[in-house]
Structures are given as structure tokens and as C-alpha cells.
Image (cartoon, rainbow, N blue to C red; front, side, top):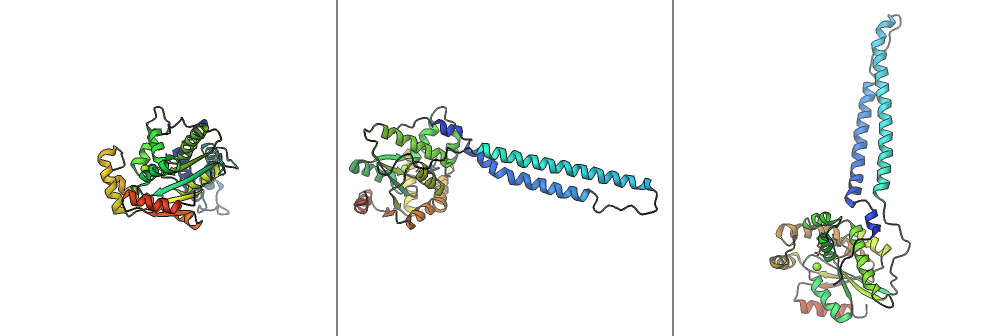
Length: 304
Ligand code: C5P
Ligand code: MG
């Protein structure tokens, strides 16, 4: 079992993923408020105001001139504050999104390191099948969910509460956290080898396209995706049964429903994308664990 290490400094240098989300969400709202304020002050600036009538006493014009001056002044102030706000938003956007340095090549070469992604809905049996594959094919099993739970429970973790909230809600944790945890675990495993060679089953990952892109770009290219296809009613029964003893905060009816929704809307597009590239090995997973494993072995022979 891989012990999760501290997230590296690279991860801590990044702003909190939540912070960068709020930067994205906040900027357009503020800008639109300012725009509408600016429009209001155009109207207030006297476009519809009375014009001086030739021949009339100039003293009657003063109140209107004063309104025009005040209106123009406040408009200028609004324009300035809008410009300042845009600059501040830009600055906070760039500082809030300091991503890990972009790498041109992944940390691990696929000549030395084999990565197989293992996907399937919650309760499809990924963990059970991975244990069989570890026994027979000398893989190291890394479960993204297990690594996230360990990081959540690590005393002093900056991301503990964030991970807890996402998991309970069946939502996908911001990918920087998960990708970094996986890279750390792979580094630790490979550091114990003489030649830096290894085989990894990465279970429950990538659950979202951005995780897939980031991992393959910066950590390692994946060889193929093992996809366990299982109907929801079977998965639900398994999860509720597991919930009797697992102690997991998300093995309850309400969280399970959210997890299914996330799987269909966010994770299936990952499977479909890899399928188009001919990289998906699909195994029907509603049978007994033994039968599912027999089909798994048959289907992966020749691919590993
Ligand atoms: O795979 P597992 O069911 O253990 O995942 C539990 C939870 O961990 C998911 O529902 C999700 O909240 C989070 N997770 C994630 N990204 C992953 C894997 C798991 O956000 N790649
Ligand atoms: Mg699992």
C-alpha cells in the first residue's frame, strides 16, 4: 500500500483550486454591474437635459451646467474605477492561477512505465478486479479515491476539507490535487526500483477530461483504458451493501445518486474519448467477480 506523501511544493505554490474558481466566476458579474452603472450615469449625465435657449438669461443655465458637470465627473470616475477593476481582475486572475510549470514532456516515459487506467461507475468492481491483476501481473495499484481519502485524513492537509466536501457530494475534486497525488505515489514506487521501470493500474482515474489531459501531458502516457461496464441497479445494490461496513461518507443513497449523475455526465465522456482512439478494453461487469476476472484476462492478453 502506497503511503501518500506530502503534496509537493509545486502544488502548495498554486492558489487554492476553489480560489481560482471564484476568480473565474466573479469577474464577469462585477464587470456587468459596472457596465450597467456606467449606462445609468450616461443617462444621468444630461443627454436628455434641456438645452440653453438663446436670448434667455444665462443665470438659468447654471443649474443645468452644474448637473452636466457633476454627471460627467461621476462618469469619468466610473470609467476609471472600471479600468482599475479590470486591471485588478486580470492581476488576480494571473496570480490566482499560477499553474504548475508547464512541462513539455511527461515525468515518466512510457518506454519504462506502463499505465493502465481503470474506469467504471461507482460499484462496478474496479478495486476487486485490480487486486486480481496485481496478484497475476505484477502491477502496482493506485486508487485515486483512496489517495484522496488519505490526503483528506492527513493531519495538516491544506486540502482536507475541500476533498471531504467534494467526495460527500459525489463531485470531482479539482484535478491538480489528484494528478499531483498520483505523481507522488508513482515517484515513490519507482524510487524503490533499480531501473525506474514499473506498471501501474490507476483505478478510478481519469474521471473527467481535464484529469486525462493533464496526466498524460505531465505525468505519463496511458497504454489503454480498462472499462468495467455495469448497470446502475447492480452497482447501487453493491454500494448499499458495502455501505453497511465501509464507513465511507459517500456510500449512502443520496451520495450514490449524485455519484451516478457525475459518472454519466462527466466520466463517460472520458471513456467515449478514449474509445474513439481505440484505447478502451470493455468488460461486462454485472456477473460474479470470478467471471468478470476471466473476461478481463482474456481481453487484456496481448495488450500488456
Ligand atoms: O473511486 P472512488 O469511488 O473511491 O472515488 C470516491 C470519490 O473521490 C469520487 O466520488 C470523487 O468525489 C473523488 N474522486 C475524484 N477524482 C477521481 C477519483 C475520485 O474527484 N479521479
Ligand atoms: Mg474503489
